[in-house]
Length: 158
Image 1 (cartoon, rainbow, N blue to C red):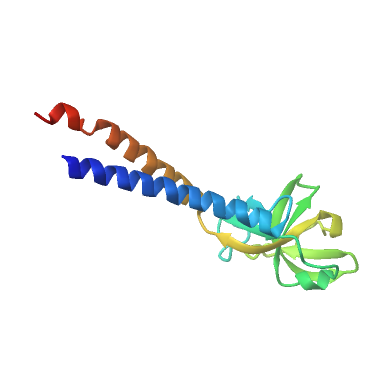
Image 2: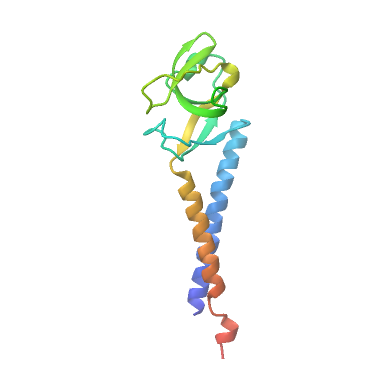
């Protein structure tokens, strides 16, 4: 019985440490990139297959003054027509405006974001991030339940 009790405790601690590591890694990314809104969840398939729906994207806002540096890169930008932040690829630059398009879409976006709308470019994406987070939380809760239901060593020892 004692071996099962110890193993459950070790697995529970390992799962909690993994969750904390992932959380701290993301927070560290935010601080390191010094961007005010560095993380977004992609809620559509418009960038599939490069960035599937429900992926977490990490944004870097240090792209310099030249909008041409963004051509070919997916960017996060505010679209006032849709009143939300979109992640689409820059296909061209026209003065202070960029033309964007989702990889899965057949047409250019009807809004051309300017410098003030652009939050930054996508530096990394984590596919299906919600599965990772909820899966890990589920495992932690399950391990806590198992740990709580293990027989108490003091009661079983004679």
